[in-house]
Length: 385
Image 1 (cartoon, rainbow, N blue to C red):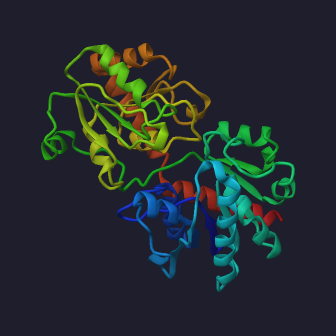
Image 2 (cartoon, rainbow, N blue to C red):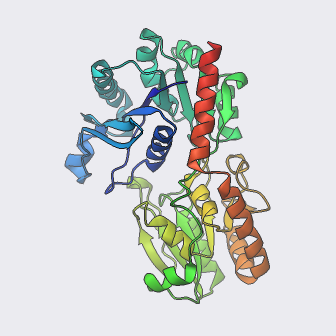
Image 3 (tube, rainbow, N blue to C red):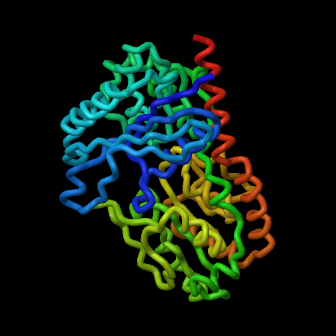
């Protein structure tokens, strides 16, 4: 049974900067299962200087449970944007190497949060004969990795196991030549069931001064074309129903901003992760007409809060959404998005049925169950070596 793991990721949150919360969630859940977790997540000095992005502590240790804890290293590195990946990769690799070299122990396993992070741990894992695992949760597995696939073949061969958030990600990883089916498990993204759960809608609307009679559509994600913020906004406009209101929870991403601008937006912008469940519980339905995902955390959070979901009839959703909890639509079809919202507004019986189905599905997607499944898989694969 493993007792320590090193996890490399692209980010890690603080209470005031909720970036990559899902990495923290799995880390804390692993600690609860008796594993020391050391996270390495380099942070950008450039974004701090040019955009005012918060700089996190370079080292912090917390969530101690029965002698185990999370230790987070966030070395500062320069970055120059997506067009200078070789430059960015060079400084990222150097920073990760420095942290790994200073570790006062040899971990039982290495864990890359997405394929490119697994690649970043490969050299260290191989040199020290440590089993290496990869979590694949990208919206486009092949396209979102900046390593040379031909040169990386020895890395792919070395990886002991792959944790896929969906059948779609598993299939993409296999078809891309990264792994084989016998080295994969499917473990959909999950939520903290203590935080994301059904709450009293009436009391929350009173607390936040939200009209009790409004029919509210919630969206969570980046305001960009892929996520469909503007398509949802346009669908609401097309309905011409002033009783339909909305929450657009998130922010724009640089030059990819597609700002929702329909009438009746009751909230628009980012929210602290701790507050997000309250806003989801004030909504009547959740809508995300997204084009690409691995397995969408926002949808899993909405399900856990009992929201009927309107989302894409695409393979990345099929592990978590079906006729029991969602209306699946073509995400580029604004009329289809509008029709689904209208149907749910007018059919209270259907809305209740899908809400009950969402809660049932949400119960199976708790972070503690996911951590148990992943750790059991890691231990199994290590025993087979």
